[in-house]
Length: 365
Image (cartoon, rainbow, N blue to C red; front, side):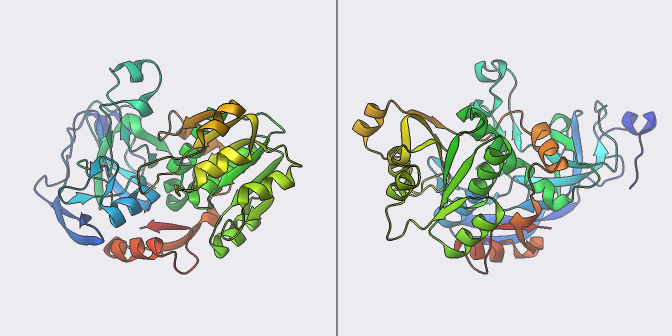
């Protein structure tokens, strides 16, 4: 791998060896279930940016929401938009003010470009920045493309032993770490995770690595239940035709679990969470509901004195995510079940939407 770290590289202007009028291929979402691979102009950098060759991009649940519904809440695909935000890349060119990266280095990239000036940014919560530019969130283009330009500060070096595909999962792992941090999980706590998609599985994995004594999971799809049991969960419950909350109350001798992480986004799961958590416990809501509503029994939540928090992406989690993978605390490899080329993004999204072929995580390469 080239590592041109001499000063002359850093003194070059942006795009010293690239034609600014050149084009690249990108997978563009035009509307519901309408993805087309087309030519787009190569993006232009600022002096603090890096020009990246995108090596791998994970398909996130939020990408599937845009693909299936054309929106998440009030964020609507009103114009053709490049989706994608979980990515790793190779540094191809440096803006003239970039000092901390070198050409040829392998990086995972934080897709959130916060303003750094608002109240939330200054108080240490860039994930809540109202001015954030987040890759793949309309109208901001994402990275289902051959190249991208990002601030150097958003790039984190991948360890040599970590693949580009694993690097794409550092962003969802960061979301899981943020969810666990919000919960203030203590060693020995009991945990339930509702939903065994990638986020739910990663939350369960981080919970175990952080000292959870028992992790219960619920999941309606049999293949995902089997995967969860093999991957991380101590008990996996089928919520279809069963009262999942009652099952967990029985398994905990009526007490309930200390913490519930809702990662399904299903209409019924917040209410299940409120029922299965112990009095004085916490519910952390990470799932994105299709109907943009969160419903549970208010009197039960009030009587139990529950603490309820919502997960908004992540903050300052990449270094921790990299260390957890590097030291073997979390294993990302089993989650990656499918690989597709850029030209087949639409096919990959359709497969994920329909839960076909045992899919857990798809990586576009």
